[in-house]
Image 1 (cartoon, rainbow, N blue to C red):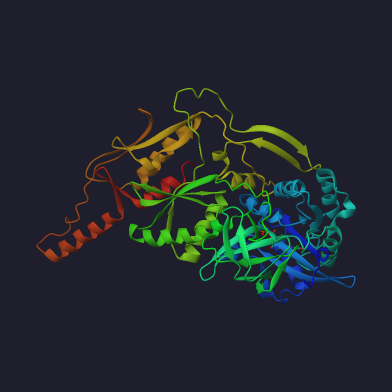
Image 2 (tube, rainbow, N blue to C red):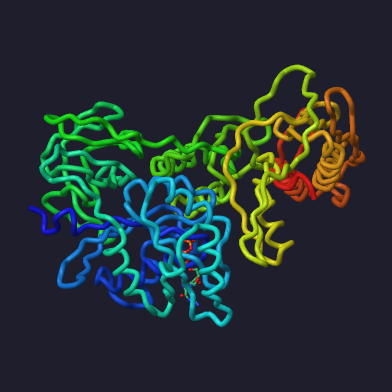
Length: 561
Ligand SMILES: Nc1nc2c(ncn2[C@@H]2O[C@H](COP(=O)(O)OP(=O)(O)OP(=O)(O)O)[C@@H](O)[C@H]2O)c(=O)[nH]1
């Protein structure tokens, strides 16, 4: 029998706008319950990945089981850490599915921000108990009263329910643990029910195969049990299971209400689909509803720096996607960059983090082409609807100083630099969140870039008609700067269909490397010719024109000033 009956278990998440202090609070909770020692080194233990530490953001949700005594009773508290950035809201919703309650952290200085609202609704719709926690009360400009008023107004939660803390200093954090025990319902279910578990996360380990994080909804499971994954109807034998503290801590059994990990000889994360149900071979149960798969919103090409590195990069991408099932991968090739892939991400930050992980964890060097968003094109000339680029949907005043605006935007207008622009225009005060609002008709056209009349496939872009001229001009100018003079004149043109909208010219020039070699020193001549040939290797030939590879990337990366 488990030491913890179901009514002594609490499963909860911490949700917040980015930087409001989730990881800091998680560290404090871990320290106070003895899961980790209280040292500076343990800063943000749940942020395991190197990118997470460097960028100070949480990418992958982590789980920890904590032991806590309250009123003479022992409780098992399962804390599931969640990422804060908009790109990762999919991870937030799947973490929530394993919980009965959330700590909603709000910065005492910044107050309610865009992702506070988005995360609140995720928890509210999942019918979870919500405990508002006002953090950073130690800050000089902290204004917890104002934040409490916002919480009352926007979320309709009485101010008395708010807990004021400083996660950094540990002030009043004990009250948070008490609230978890008192206000969050236990997970329900019984150890006597048939075994049923929800897979809410999974990762791949090179030695042990798939490690699935599960929330046991009912019954019990032990080593050697034969279990079935409902999605694929495949049977596995349990090799190992246990709690996450946050390190894996093997146990004999897992019981209803517990959250932990299970290893059962699965070879691919696709076998442990997020949202899938595991049950016992002998006692089949009805599967849980599962989740909608994450939808890629931003697409980019990834190519090896050098084609000889293609196999290494392929294996790195394969291994990394084993751990991140939200990335989609398709093979692709480009005239300029050779064989590569087209990858789909949940957002731009997700893409950057993926790229950084490729470099840091797999030592891969990658060329990333400019991100694009999916379009549906109707192949006729009937795109008649004139659409404005941003359409206002609603305005809500949070308090005298803050207003929440809802707009409908084309995704391509916001993925690249919208967030940065918004931040700098508002001196960092504005915050931003988005969700997919489906495809909308828009006046978009395909713009080609031609070198001496020949279209360069990878520079073809889809642009809004009103922007075509300025973008075409900017791209031609940049290409002119980066293509060296050659033996003949090169015309760089931007065109829509057969109509040229911008043009630049690179004048003809022959660099006579032998001009300086008067006399007959043949070895010197050979050396200079060799150097010139090496320079050419860094070039891509398009038609008969040599284009430096770097030029390509710079043009692709910044399409518009
Ligand atoms: N003054 C003060 N600073 C705090 C407090 N709690 C957190 N911070 C600081 O706020 C910053 C962000 O804290 P994190 O815990 O990394 O925030 P987070 O919400 O986990 O961020 P993501 O995981 O990326 O969403 C860090 O520099 C913390 O040191 C607090 O109570 N007081």
